[in-house]
Length: 251
Figure (cartoon, one colour):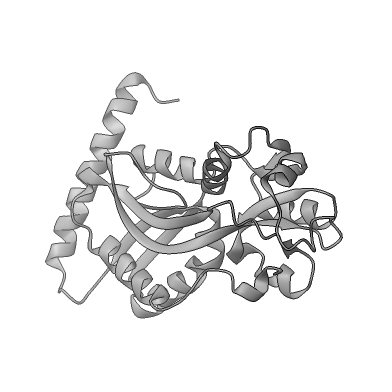
């Protein structure tokens, strides 16, 4: 356990280390990117986007090392503020003035059910029907949960949350094999839709679009490693869509 002095000293020591690294970077030729960057990401980006991004950086910048941590959005923010990582990826809006934000991409959350669920073949699922259902959801603090709670706020008075899990995989399995509804990112169920293991329920009254964004500490200064990763990330997703096709929902 860190003492009070240790908690005071740790962020200042890490900031000094960052400045030393920036000086070291400046001594290299401009085309050479080298060093370690700790990236803390929420689950969707870590699973579906970062493997190809990190692989490309490994190939193009062999002297750059990315250390990856995977947490929910709340813990990503906490890790940044505690100087435990250099860059974060979150799945909801950031309102903390101590952090800088750069939008990366938009995706959608969807309400899912088993193909055998009574709602699975409805042309539209009403708010009253959603209120009657049993739900399995992400834990409080997850970006997915924040977006879902915001979408139903003021529309549904009493959501029956039966289970909460940190794992999207567990949520998908519970929904596919039971009578629950769930809410997950579209990117997480593409395979299950193709295999007819899950169905997207048409819920036009819920707005569950969300932003996936990079965040970093305002006091972190310039970082060639961060700018390199951001540039490659923009290039990776340019012109791509991460939203469900109309055919993915029943009409």
